[in-house]
Length: 207
Image (cartoon, rainbow, N blue to C red; front, side, top):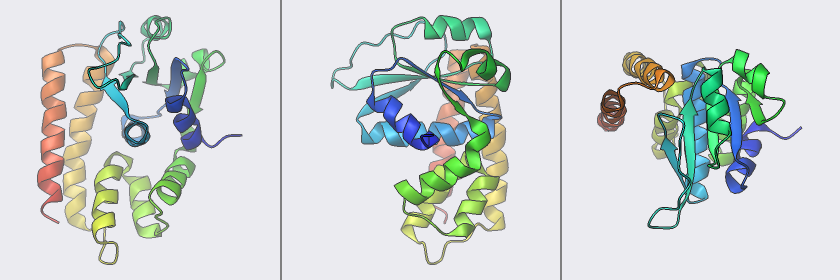
């Protein structure tokens, strides 16, 4: 069976229209979103967080392929998304995963720990158990921890200061998840996403 990370990579490189991911919870969903964005960047694919169901697969001014990323636990919405002609990745719950996985390319987040290890080992050449175990316990913080480790692997430590930051980021990510899932208040969603990016940048400079 193909490894899930390679499965995502193959999907991004292909013209297949839909990929379904059982994310288990929003923290693990953040890890898969990090994987999607990293692999898309390597393939010159633009990832767009989309609220709604009518994504348009037109090329942008730089001729980048677009990949639309949805978070939804609404079965009817998932049916509408997958009936379109855009390339979509849908993060959802186990109930909808069971319902749609037979007809769609799909990934089960229950393999999350194995996927995270593979991603760090093969794409970042990281085998240090300290960061791997920390990322398993805090999957929503993978990108920041990998960035920190890459700059100073010898002195890397997941100290208590990071936990305080993680609590803030986790709370913020939960708010973002709820806004995406309910498809309401696009302005508020944008503000939350902007706050997350700015907070991570500011925090990263303190290490």
